[in-house]
Length: 129
Image 1 (cartoon, rainbow, N blue to C red):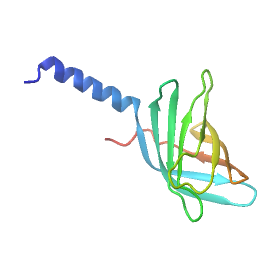
Image 2 (spheres, rainbow, N blue to C red):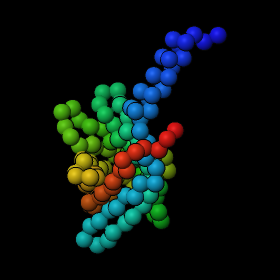
Image 3 (cartoon, one colour):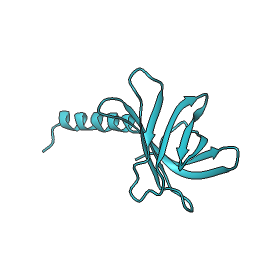
Image 4 (cartoon, one colour):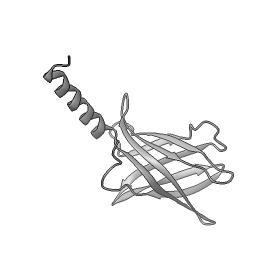
């Protein structure tokens, strides 16, 4: 039999985990440079890493690009994230950095020798688990 205290502790733990790991689905990512504009959908997961906050960008590829899995780490005392593409089956190497700007996020994305400005917005509420 589970004690009343154990149920309470488990409930608090689940609540903390939910708060600490919000997940946002169907996020529109936009890349622009002087030659093109690209729109792709993906998801964002916020979590506390071993040594710093992390923002994970999981983006489905289209055509000859992707997939993209960037585990953005926030360097100590900085307000931006940095990452490289670590997706299995990735076609191109990617280096990216991004920061919160106003109501969304914007950053620099370097893929296969091309540099892009990329942006995305997160809704007010994460997806319920």
